[in-house]
Image (cartoon, rainbow, N blue to C red; front, side, top):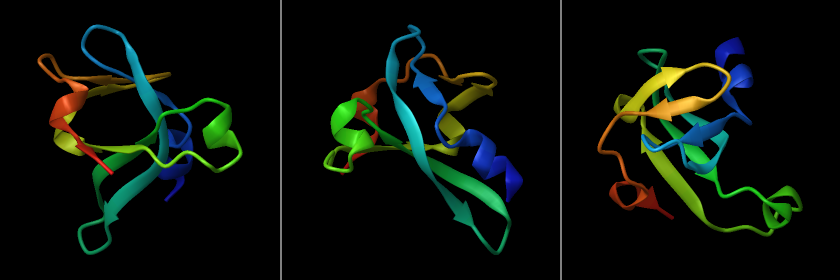
Length: 84
């Protein structure tokens, strides 16, 4: 899916415009061809060399807008997401 290639690497901001990470992968439902969630990395040098283990999963229904950056809906806090 070409859209996924455009989403990977975008910064994700919470409702207060604080960067919570960058999209490093997208969870897709193959049967429905729909996006289920974004998997975020924390960014920084440790992620760029592959040693970062912290990931945040953001369900697609928490997304408010996708543009140059991805904005989350109001009331969204990182603690509400699954961190693996």
